[in-house]
Amino acid sequence: MKRSVTEMMRAVLAEQSKFLSEVKDSEIEAMLGAINSADRLFVAGLGRSGNVARCFAMRCMHMGLDVYVVGETVTPAILPEDMLLISSGSGETGILAGIASRAQ
Image (cartoon, rainbow, N blue to C red; front, side, top):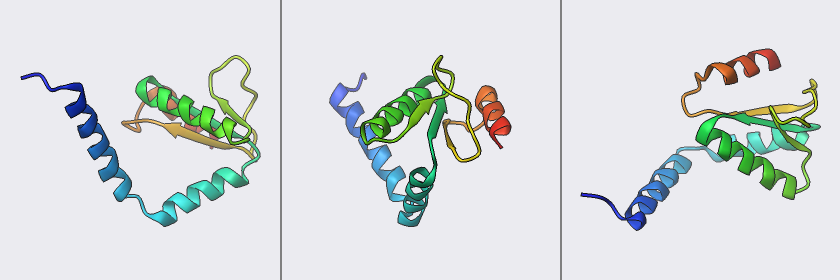
């Protein structure tokens, strides 16, 4: 039996709520502190994770942060004072792992 769009959206929201409830406030604060202290923020991701990364970058830009999407034609080189945030469902995507390795 096919689920309705409403049922699917409720399932997605329930999954996200469960995930967020498992993230400690201290971890969120640490991430926000790291983003705030970086000179510039760079985001990377592929597929759906890449779409989320680009949406996050746009929101950060709206808040006045200096943010870039890795792989775009106008993205400058990442410097030691910058932060790279990679979005990956598996954590094993070859291209993203390569970007992370080079950034280290």
